[in-house]
Length: 159
Image 1 (cartoon, helix red, strand yellow):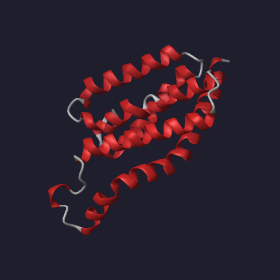
Image 2: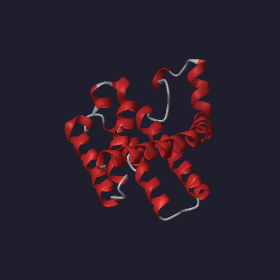
Image 3: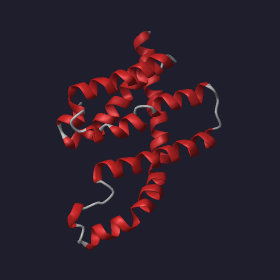
Image 4: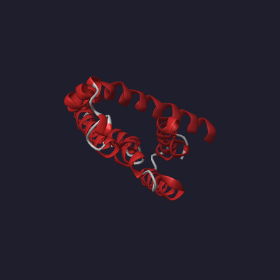
């Protein structure tokens, strides 16, 4: 909801939502984590995201499900490199869909006469896939570390 009330806080809203979705996963409540994800999406749509649905699409496609997928990866002992490759492609695909939905497939709108926008629109797919891949590696690592911190915090609260 933070991101819909203020455009500046969209990424922070994604992050807070992801951390909140990690709480049921800290006790291996996978079904509870998925239901929390569905509840988060439904509440966001009801509370105003229906007007700007394209802002919610990256959370629906990737950011809301990413902690759940990481939990499943650990639970079923899936090869980390195989999982990283699949998640990277999934992340890049989400960035591409967000680009299409948010910018309509062209940055700068109809006035894309500017050389900067012309360069971006020419190389956007390289920027999305190469840049997204480079960004995703530390991002995935940090999300695993965040899940570990949430696990420890929930364990201490329970104690």
